[in-house]
Amino acid sequence: MNRQPILEDNLVTLRPLSDDDFDDLYKVASDKELWVQHPSYDRYKKEVFRNLFEESMASGGALVIIDRSTGKVIGSSRYQPIPGVNNGIEIGWTFLSRKYWGGKYNGAIKRLMIDHAFKEVDFVLLHIGKENIRSIKAAEKIGAVRLTDPSLKHLMKRPEENYTYRIRKEEWGDQFKKFEWFR
Image (cartoon, rainbow, N blue to C red):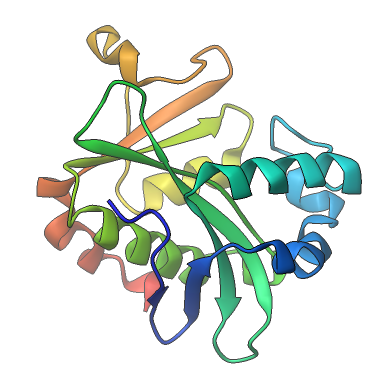
């Protein structure tokens, strides 16, 4: 699967993250409020964010998110392979400027990324910190289902810290269309 495509709709463009994006992306990430519910709550610090940025660059799946109406960088997300699993992909490490919280932008980003993923894989996983209520609600809003079955433990990442949500390809087709908030 191409983990660094160019994806776009009328709201956003997602393109591969580059070294040149650090300053613009750090302007977004330096907002301490972005990380309050996140397990890595200190990512607003430049040296901590630099580690995330370098990890994202090395991942081969990081995307920068651009507001199409302004051309400004508003966040980032990425695709990550799931160890030992060929028919699924993880989407995560997503953060957005607070100005874009609350629905349609995150919905557009997830729709673009999930639609792209389902050209190649059968399911998408989202790992969300147990304290990250905003992201939990956002995942449920797009129809993701929390995994609780012990037989699926191999898909869960650090279950003591995170909830794992799954979206299956066969459930996605019309699932997203019923959500009016993303339009």
